[in-house]
Length: 224
Image 1 (cartoon, helix red, strand yellow):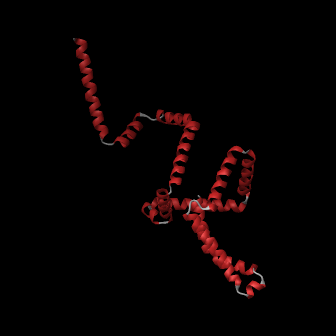
Image 2 (cartoon, rainbow, N blue to C red; image 1 turned 60 degrees about the vertical axis):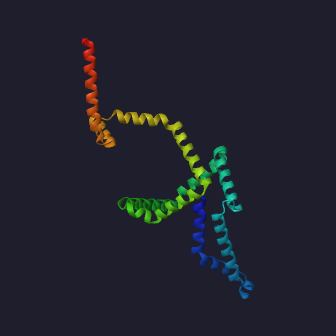
Image 3 (cartoon, rainbow, N blue to C red; image 1 turned 120 degrees about the vertical axis):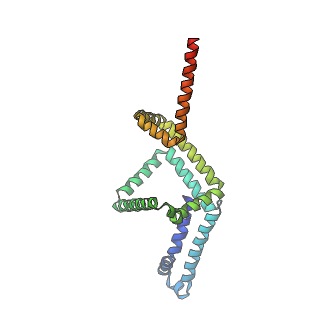
């Protein structure tokens, strides 16, 4: 998320350069304008921000990036250990959800996301050629190069699986058991055929032959 935020900041900065220059021009006093320093000041601000985003993107040990990561770790710890932090975050969430503009924005995001998923499902070959493909490729490249992210994702996956097993293990077992118990013979046969394929016919034949032979041997032993 931090990587994505840095990239988004760089794109937003580039797209809004004229707006930043106009803001600096409006805020600059007459002396700066008279000396033509307002444009240089705007250039210095934009170039400084660009340099900051590039350095944060390429240097995992950048001081600003480290500070942000430390703040996120502290926030995560406070959310787990401090009720007042949880209450404050919960209040902010409720305010956002109650805001009509935010609700409309979320609805728009959902509609666009749903349309994109449906469109991608109808044309799977085009998925990797668009923005989704670029995101997946970027994620893959980052995972290959950044050991910290790989370790973090692996740790998260292990904790998530263990947590789900501990919290919902009995419910999952119950759901699977009840689902399988509700299947009739035809459903079980169809699912086995779908999973095993043509080999199921050989399994049936072998089972019949082996069962017949065992029955015959037991019958002979009984007679003897």
